Image (cartoon, rainbow, N blue to C red; front, side, top):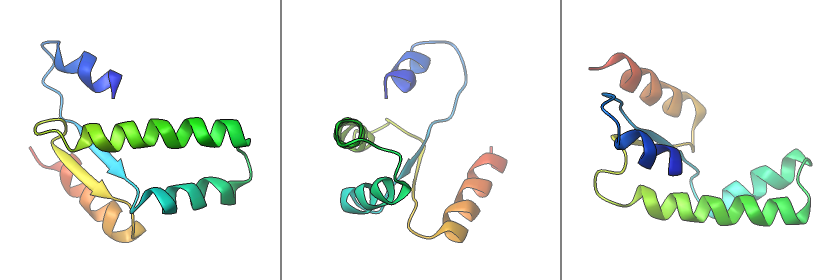
Length: 85
């Protein structure tokens, strides 16, 4: 989120992509399933994700939002975005 805001202030002709989880509950489940997060780091990541999801709703924040609920579909959308002009 901060990186997007910083790059938008430059003269770079960047395009902005946000890959979103299907839901916060799904994100939490995925993070817990990895077994790599402490409760504190899990809470921090979820709080950051909530802030990023809210920012993604702002008009013009991103050029494309891909919901990562189906890997093949998300990949196809990513590929189409990257190869388009």
